[in-house]
Structures are given as structure tokens and as C-alpha cells.
Image 1 (cartoon, protein in one colour):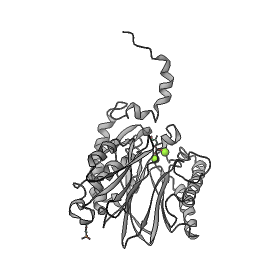
Image 2 (image 1 turned 60 degrees about the vertical axis):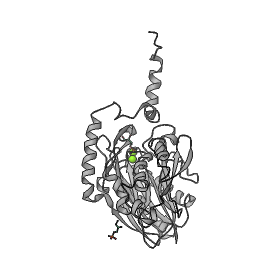
Image 3 (image 1 turned 180 degrees about the vertical axis):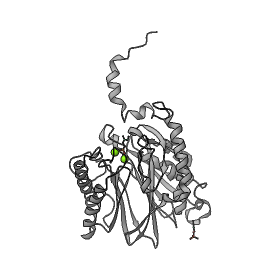
Image 4 (image 1 turned 120 degrees about the vertical axis):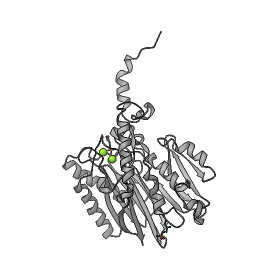
Length: 366
Ligand code: 13P
Ligand code: 13P
Ligand code: MG
Ligand code: MG
């Protein structure tokens, strides 16, 4: 049976500041998606939040880029924004960069990750959701899951994965894409995805079967808006077991926190901390960046779950390490490498300050 899994998210208002989502906004999501389920527009749904981002997880039969599903998501975000406005939540409607829905929600502010799959006899999927970071944050963990045998034992000892995967990398600046075969082209791949602000892993396919294996949201808010409005706070769907990495191999990269861009004002590097939904509430210096992982078993399109995967106590040391890294970086205050380099700040908060000081810079005649 063919089923489409769509994860569409937006920051429609923060409670308090940028730290969390308000229960009434989540309730609005439930209300509208349960109505859509009742009339058969979607098969099933789960509404949740990661920090100040409202996350709509939906299954349906309409394929990716469906105008109907994107329109439904837009309607939910607009209705939740109305709730946010009534409560005067912070940045109500932050990610809705347009007044009216134009047919495809991509490019309008919300983040989108979708895959159409032939549902297997057992279809475990993990949905990653992050707050206070950017889409490139998935590059390193996706590389580890699908191309690093030190992370994924199955690449070596699992016959079904031995030939590797194909990575699609998007250049968000030039709006170009390229495909890399792994393992044979990992050095070329790493050259690009090692710069995650510009190059982002968007899709991964099984090399032999061509099955879609992982898909991430690559919408870059500041490029779309032309100015800083908030961070991208991306989502990512990963299929597990069988031809794909085991659930534990998919979660394993997050046991060692890495440094990603985002955090305060979207302008700092900070550690990506794996957390349960309850702990997905970034408050210290508006962070540090968080990642949640929800596991589902699909059953004829029904979302059996979620299991809150990072609730596991074995991720406790990662959280502790992330906190230590946060202290180390915070010590730098407004200095790099805590603050983003200037070229990155051009897409955030820098241009206004530069414009104001423009006349005071004189040519050095010394
Ligand atoms: P079980 O023996 O518990 O099914 O686990 C198999 C496996 O592949 C774990 O990664
Ligand atoms: P969000 O992108 O999560 O809204 O955070 C924005 C921000 O400025 C945090 O300091
Ligand atoms: Mg916000
Ligand atoms: Mg956010």
C-alpha cells in the first residue's frame, strides 16, 4: 500500500518568548486535523511541538507536494496564529511569510519533509524535530546513519545495506542539487555537507532498491524572507530496519552532541541536545538547540505511536555533555566561535548595524 508521510511545521507564536508552544495552539491543530481525518482527507495525524514550533505529522494518500495537504497545513497554521494573537504570544505568525496560500507551502515559511512510500510489512520511522537551529543540522547525523560504519554496523554486517546509499545535496544559495553515491564518493560528499549553512542533505535513497530512506526540510527562512525572522528549526524523517539502519543506528549519532548554528537570535553556535518532548523547552540563552525524536510504526497509514525516543536514560550523558559545551561556548559572549561568522550574520541581524555605521568607516591612509 502506498502512503505519504508529511511532516509540516511552523513557528506560529512562542510561549513565553521563543521557548515553548501554547497548549491552545496545539489544541487548534488537533481540532482541525481530526476534522480532516473524519472526512478522509488524511488517514491519521499527530500534532506536537518542539519548543516554539508547531509540528503536524500526517499520513495520507495524496503524494508529496499535495496542494490539498499543504493547504490544510496552512489553514491549521493560520487558525493557530489567530489563537496566538489572541493570547498575544511572542512572534505570532512568525513563519507565515505570506498573506494567502499559493498552492505549495514550500517557500512560504513553514518547514516541510515528506515521503511517499510503499508501506512494508513493518514500517518503523523516526521523525526528528529540532528547535533553535538550521536545516543543515541534519548533515552530520545523516552522514553517520547512512555512510559511517563506526555508527551503523549494518553497513558492514547487513547484506541489505552493504552497497550503500545515494545522498542528494542541495546548495541553498545557488538553488542547485547534486547526487553522491556512498561509500565510493564520501570524500566529495563531505567536502560540501561539511559546510551545512549552504549545503544540506535533502534526500537519501537506497542505492540498489532506490527506496526513499530519509528526507529533511531544507527551507531556509532568512533566504525566503530576505531578512532574519527566526531560525529554520528543521524536521527530518528516517525509515528504519530492513534495508535501512536499525532504530538504534538512527538514534546513535545524537549520543555525541555536535555544534550547530542557531541558539540566541539564530546567530550563535551551540550544542544540539537530544531531549524528550517535555524537555524540548529551550530557555537558557534561548537554547541550547534541541532535537526530539518520535518513533512510529505505520500500520496501513495509521501512526502507531509516538514513542519519545530520546527519553531513554542512555541519552542522559549526551545532555550533560551538551550542557558542558554550552558553558564553554557561552564564555565567548559576542566573540566567534560562539557568535556566527560575519558572512553568516549577513542573513541574520548584521545588515542593519552595518548600514548605520557605513559612513563612519574611513579609508586607512597610514
Ligand atoms: P532483536 O533481536 O531484539 O529483534 O534485535 C535485532 C536487531 O537487529 C537490533 O538492532
Ligand atoms: P525561533 O527561530 O525558534 O523562533 O527562535 C528565534 C530567536 O531569536 C531565539 O533567540
Ligand atoms: Mg519563535
Ligand atoms: Mg523555533
